[in-house]
Amino acid sequence: MNSGRFLDRTTPPHIITLVVIAGVAALCMNVFLPSLAAMAVYFETDYAVMQFAVSGYLAATACLQLIIGPLSDLFGRRPVMLASIAIMIVATLVCMLAPNITVFMMGRVAQAAVVSGFVLARAIVRDMVPMEQAASMIGYVTMGMSVVPMVGPTVGGLLNDISGWQSSFALLSLLGVGILVLAWFDLGETNHNKSASFSQQFHAWPELLRSPLFWGYALTSTFSSGMFFSFLGGAPFVGSVLYGLAPAMLGLQFFFMASGYMLGNFISGRYASEIGITRMMLSGNVIAIAGIATTMLLISAGAESAYAFFVPLALIGVGNGVTLPSANAGMVSVQPHLAGSASGLGGAMTIGGGAALSVLASSVLSREDGTWPLLLVMLATGLVALLTTYVVRLQEKRE
Image 1: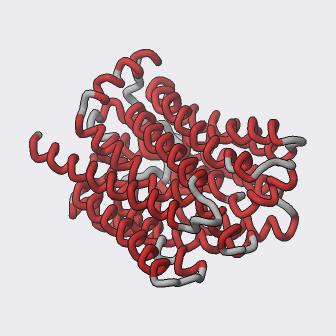
Image 2: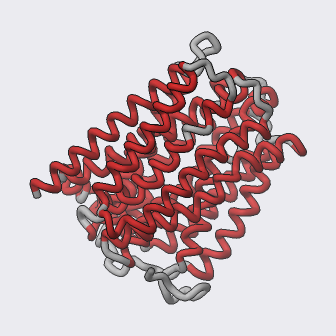
């Protein structure tokens, strides 16, 4: 794999640097999830309002990806990454010290700047290597990065029990300073063909949006990850309200999903360049749907344990880990000279769709209906992902 010398700003970043930065970006999304109920009490607001800390954050990351990609094509990957991390550190401190829910939400939305960790990691990899190799390398980056959020909710739950919800944000601010220092010393510039102007990047969007292949890859990414985002929106309610789990125990349930994601990313890193990205995407979506179907069968058979719900859904993680590196590599390879814009535009569609599905999943849940509404939303999303992947396959044959 082609990565630069470690801590040498004159070469491309080492793969470890991309893993760590993307890992902290992922941690921002989920470390505090087990504390949502406690935070609702602290800020004297409804749980549904507090859940906006997830869906609002996702919506903000969707919007920011539209800007971060083109900015990095214009100014370079390095300065945009450094500025984004600095904004994230300040925003995290605002969240931690917020006196009310309004200030907290303002900080939480600004915290989404760290999404550059995802967007620019993909673009940097594509700057360095060709498409099939990019799918493998993105697989390894996301496998490594998934270690961090895998333990995130578990650590967040424990920190909540020990010293309150603010401690999760204290941890994020310290990690933010750490990745800023790491990026400063190791992140060499990889964009050596900068665009002439910011508007030129937006003029490039019609070129991307006219491509059926770009749509196929982007929608596959959107609906594949949509299964996970639906889970993210509904799982805190399912765990804390329906199964009565304590924050630390609820955090542990997320470990299964993230472990599956890590396994799926390892499979991507190992086999994507040999098997091809379309087959990888099809396989991943089939695996994820199998996990949802297994949970449905167990619930239908009368299984009442939280593990019967959470453990089989780890296959969504495996499926996402197999599908997403290939879908992302495909997106940024349709027009390689627009890799940053493609990563941002495709990422915005993925996260924007995820935010909508997260809100949908949390809004359909109730004590009376149990877990079924969430499972049906995830199943429908998975079937659409399978369909869009099949469309990619047909389009590739046509071209």
